[in-house]
Length: 85
Image (tube, rainbow, N blue to C red):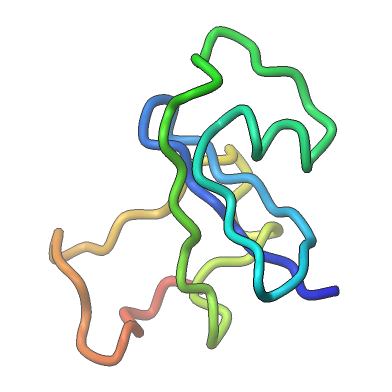
């Protein structure tokens, strides 16, 4: 099964999970259930978004702190590649 990185808007954490391509997780509760982790202080209905991780822009080993890296320009980079690897 493919793996996907999701970022929570409320706590800025990035979590990697496996699921079918046809599935998409919508909130922190679904993400925590799939990843087998505790909700913590974040509400279960906090929105999460799947990150575009093709091309190794973000990998679980590069996250370290569990926070998503920010593009230096503060906006989306052309072609989705801004050298964050």
